[in-house]
Length: 125
Image (cartoon, rainbow, N blue to C red; front, side):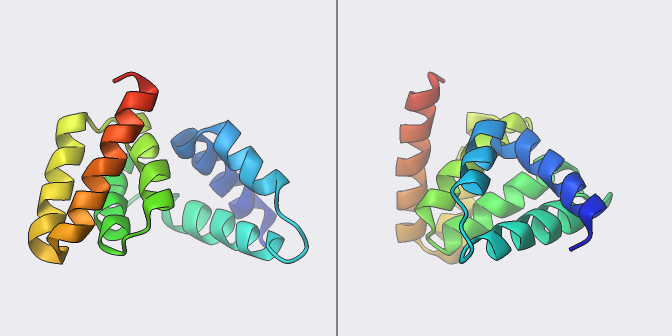
């Protein structure tokens, strides 16, 4: 593991998803799941999210679309919160999920809209 890239990824991951969420994920890791947490933090967050090519708002839009298309509700919820942290609005998120409906399927978009509504309600927005 490259410690500097891991630390960079950890910082970005905490800024986007929230320190509580990330710290809980890392604290609950055991010998079996710790390597996955390290991989996600270093490569996903440090190597890719840490690149200069796209801003965080754009990366969040892409993530919401891809994770929605894959129908991963837990990750959709986490990344809705991250997208809001990265400057997306409710309307931006709505447009992403409408795009998903057309190109990836209505059922995926229906689930993502439902999750977004629940998340917005939880956050009071």
